[in-house]
Amino acid sequence: MKLVTYNLNGIRARLPRLIEYLAREMPDIVCLQELKCADDALPIADIEAAGYKAVWHGQKGFNGVAILSRGAEPTLRQVGLPGDPDDTHSRYIEAEIDGLVVASIYLPNGNPIGTEKFDYKLKWMERLEARAADLLAGEQPTVLAGDFNVIPEDRDTFSRRAMANDALFQPESQAAYRRIVNQGWTDALRALHPDEPKLFTYWDYQAGAWQRDAGFRIDHLLCSPQAADRLRSADVHKWARAEEKASDHAPVAIELA
Image (cartoon, rainbow, N blue to C red; front, side, top):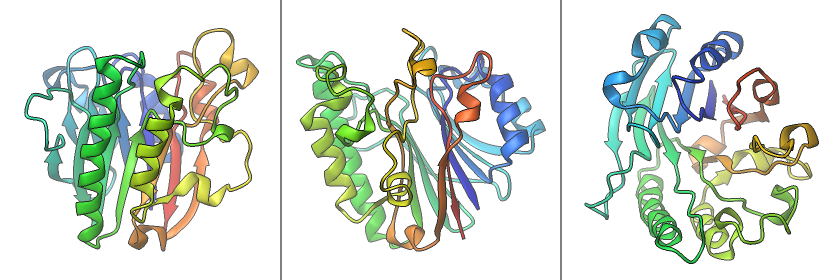
């Protein structure tokens, strides 16, 4: 089973790239983020024509998450995270597919630091931590997949200095990410590439970042123990980032036995 996380940076703008990716890689499950599209404007017919069924949690203009399945239809389990009734952002969706629980996550960016946006990021991560603990307690194979907007370690960025004042690289953000992982999750990409120095998943559109390989790792797939036991591979599909009018993120794929 091939499972992919892919921040599209706008599903309508990147629809040709998404369809191209689905045709080439034929993943079984795809977790999408940053759809930037309301539910009533989503290109559902195009996705179905490509052979996929889906559950969606869209939002006009920004955010938005979805889970696509090439096999069985995904069974929706949860939309949004509990703990903040005033939170209207479409950032979390959870489904079950053939016994595997999958969540597609678009964590808040949090910039600039020292503002309510950074506070929101950290509080959102606390809510995710609580949900992750509940999922582990269920003892089902589970994958938390998405754009976490957290650079876990120094080696996960092209430049510590460039990111020093960015919310993605703050000690508080990294600590919140570690608290989730340390519950018992396996960071699939890093687990299978422990010594890779440039394991990047995102390259900004500005300043020739892609051409200079000035990226960082913020797209993660966290596997519960039951899913980690089935983990066979994990790779960044950099070819998709090199395409014309591509997202600034590359898809990240894992294979489960």
